[in-house]
Amino acid sequence: MPTVRTLAHLAELTRSGQAPYLRYSPGPESDAGHSSTDHESGLTMPGVSANPLAAPDWWTLPLEDWLAQRVCQYLRELDEGARPWLLSGTQVDFGPDNEPLLVDIRPVAWVAPELVEQARERYTSRLDAGAATHRDR
Image 1: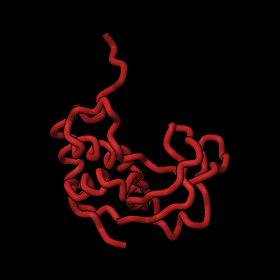
Image 2 (image 1 turned 135 degrees about the vertical axis):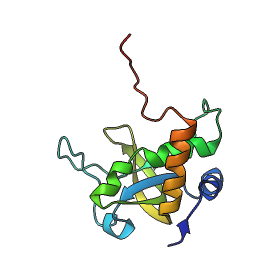
Image 3 (image 1 turned 60 degrees about the vertical axis):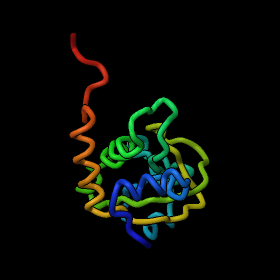
């Protein structure tokens, strides 16, 4: 599987529709045999959970800012041995975090550590990374 090394390349793949989703896991081979599990309920979901990469219509900042935010959303998974990778598939439902659940997975590319670092730098320098939804007044 090829490797994507820059946010610019990730943006190109996202715009073209070739890589509409991001997933953190051991990888496509590991995911091929089973669906995702809702960790709080223990229930098996009808597909593999993934993070959509296409920016919504209301997003008026550069796509690379959106992608940096998406890449950084699950960085904690790296500590658990997961690797980020790009995929496409057929959406069949939603998971507990309203994330798409996919079947007919088609791996596209690995996300390189240097892309993750580039995303982290962009996320923290251009956005209010980790800002709370509700603040005490």
